[in-house]
Length: 493
Image 1 (tube, helix red, strand yellow):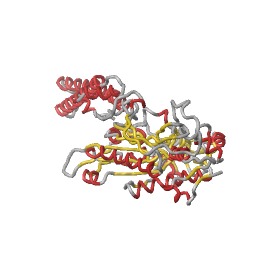
Image 2: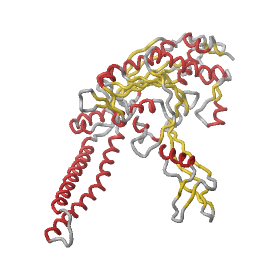
Image 3: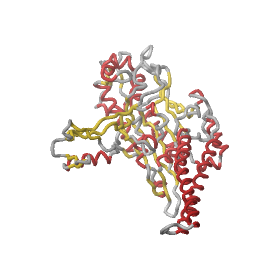
């Protein structure tokens, strides 16, 4: 979310930032709506004050009002109509401004290169070199995994359709091994706190949603999966009574507690289903409640500081660093025809996520640190990769600066993204109301949020399979991963 105060003070700089994103100017439109909103609020306050003054001047009218009192009453009624009109229109104007601000992407940092797409990205460094494989023509990971009978796309398609896989045996173990390997490094060496967050995020109709806080909603709803369900409690005689006026009285304490829990979880009051002419209640149901499946653990981890005020000294001394291994779910809307083979782009995948909550003065350094933490995983697995600074046209919606780590895939003869590390500045924090305050300060400021993959498990496995493939079709195990694989040297048929 953008800061309206910044736009008021720096309209040209704001438009320049949008232009770097390939967007048209918006400052004039935003400031016109903002001006209208502020004028309406000022007018509303003035009318309310005048109406109150009139009410105080006339006092309580007893009996027939005098002519002077009638004039004051009519004037007060006129103020009342004007107040009601503004109170009806003001939320519409406020929402109009909110919709514009929440759907515009973050402004790129000054050192982000300009470009329209991935071709404008800047190579920062290249680490390692291409492996000297013993095969004449490197195979793709899905060919190798299928030949080993440890990667089954057909079985997954029967269960769930396209873009899913069933991993078996040693490859299933490798997924678990990679997660443990990454988590051990990030927690033991880099100071991240391991978390196990929910993967279902509660849906709201307003900006309380966790997915709103991190910028997935409302703009990217099509990229997400959601699930709906109906809650139902069958009722027996004597648990509920309906009086002659149709009012429901709950007699059973367990039923009452279940309904209270529904309310606490955001459900509307359950619907009554009446059975037959007798008027007896048959069951309670609560319809249409929705949860979103997380596209990344960034969503729950970052939102752990939503609606909070942190201590500035604590934040400076100890930036909040969290990591989590979770399944992730993405609809891949707009990705038709891209990476339909294999495990590169799936609807369900696992990832070790890194999230930092930092003081604004430290977020640039924290971004470099986070990127280095992700890179260290690739270094220890002896995988050839490059670090790319994304251009303005290839950055994510919430990011002000992003590094992508691209690992070499011999089977594809190309570098492929395996991690994306972003500094979002105060863009997400403003949406989440995540702030900090010094001990002697009256004003709060917004924290800076950062997130990155440390790493995507499936793509790391793909990289290992293709880079460590042997002439006999087996897959050698990287030395650092062997302890996590029970000492296994290679995966063979």
